[in-house]
Image (cartoon, rainbow, N blue to C red; front, side, top):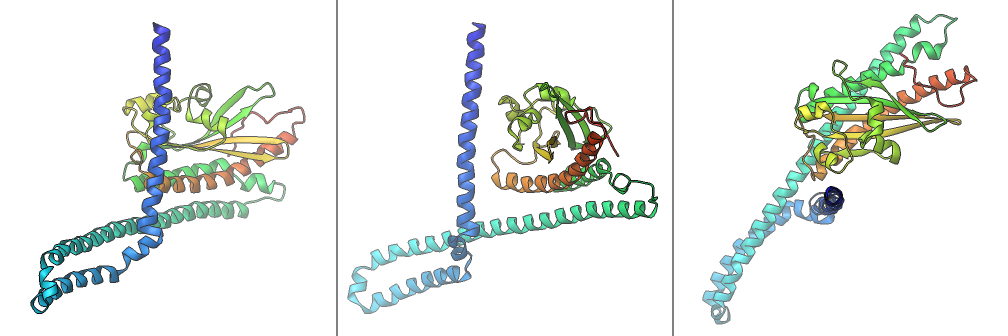
Length: 345
């Protein structure tokens, strides 16, 4: 009986995953249809035209007066007065419908304008990150000695990734209007030995006062980290509980302390230098707050853009970090695989 119950639960889980995929497909299709009709397509341009609402309103008014005046002059019109008057509510209905559709289209336009403002704020945040790096470079160049390695002395990728994580948390918390404590950003490096044994190490974490689940443990369970490493694709789970039910996410003690409520975006990054491969995973996680409702395609796509922009900044520093590791590897000819992670400032 126990094995039968387990089989039923597995079957239920598989069916629920397929059902969610179908629902998401139709929601995504509806999202693109709405955008075409209200924002980007030729129907939107027609709806946004003020001429449409003006003409329809004028036509309704003129039609009513015209039918009334012609009915007094022409017998043909007078005999069909009831039919012609019955068309008037249809014309009025079309006028009202056009106004309602135009109102919805304006709401979509306002949403796009708000999204544009969010992108401007994102660019300002990225500019602050770049400025912080520039200031650090300039200060260290002034103190550089001739005997020192310029690259090693000036380039501090872990320190810069800490700065990126700090600014990213500040930006995302403002977007969601929640406290910084509800956001967590981590950068994990994953290495694999010649025997195929994987190890993981936390390089960066935005909240250093909290304990995090061991990265090595996340590799051994059904987690977003292990999924990203296996597929090489980013994942976004607006609802952690739903992802855990589908065996795609591991609920940590911190998740459980927030009633499993939260969202997660996880993206793998791979850096190749000659024959060596360096793998990293960037994770954006919220606790006690969902970034957006499940199925809200507009918000999902918007936040994906934000996450990817920060991942690009992380990737630059990861490349520098990988170059440092590769350089150390060259100095250690006995090592034949990517080295065990060495935290460098």
